[in-house]
Length: 96
Image 1: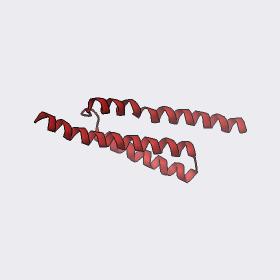
Image 2: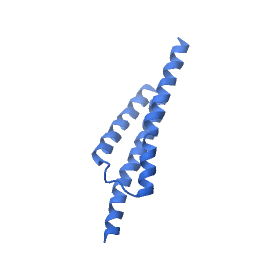
Image 3: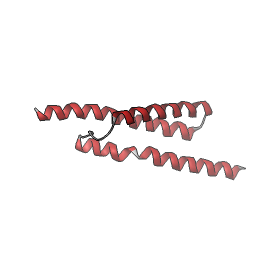
Image 4: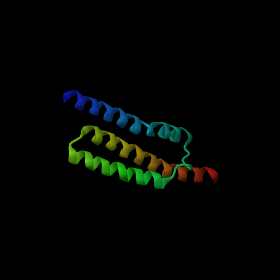
């Protein structure tokens, strides 16, 4: 029984690491290029809403893997959403 619990935790941790870290390349690219035109704000808002609900679920279940992954996922997504709007206005200023 103990091995099963450890295996499930390892699988969940690996999944959380991969899905959460998937935001990092987009954040780096956006920071370097200051361009986010091709990224949908609706996708980011919906995803942030989903990760926020997963975060609440993790808190209800006291599951630290779910809590940490979704807290980071929500934060990363909110950073991207901020970049989407911040870089949109900076591009308009450059065009003038």
